[in-house]
Length: 200
Image 1 (cartoon, one colour):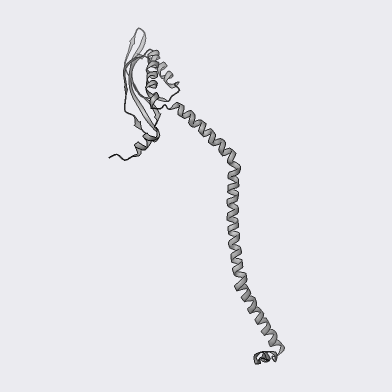
Image 2 (cartoon, rainbow, N blue to C red):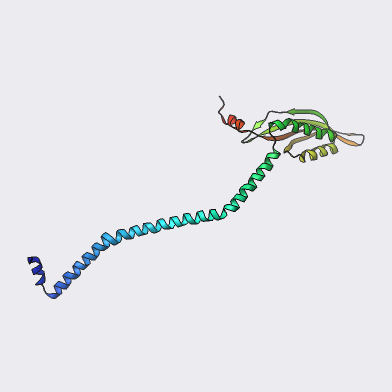
């Protein structure tokens, strides 16, 4: 038999028990250090990953549950865009729109002294189409003209309104009005691309 083992077997019972406890503690410490702690760290990491994945699943489930609502909102926005497109003419419709404005003024009883389209002012996806207007007529005719313009299916803003030459003619208040009528039109894709190119 091995002399070391014989030496241990000859030890008193208390020392044998102490030695056994010491070996058990070392063995338990080795098991904890080399097996339990790495597995515990791995388990903690997996729990964190599981929690993260569960959060993603919950978020995607919430989005999936909202999908019909989001589709309805998308369709509503498309309808609103289509409506907005009908209120902004394209370049082919601008001359007829300007002709409509002149006809409204004449129908209201105004005399056009100046009707001068100015250069378009490109914006992000649309362009301002300003027109300098000078008309003469009664206050009543001017009010009718502005009301008729506001009822057009297209957007037309009347700004910079200035009254001058106010006089009483046959018990009617006559005046001369200078204003700026601005309508808008959508730019097509080519115009938007050209507008974004740097000027040489």
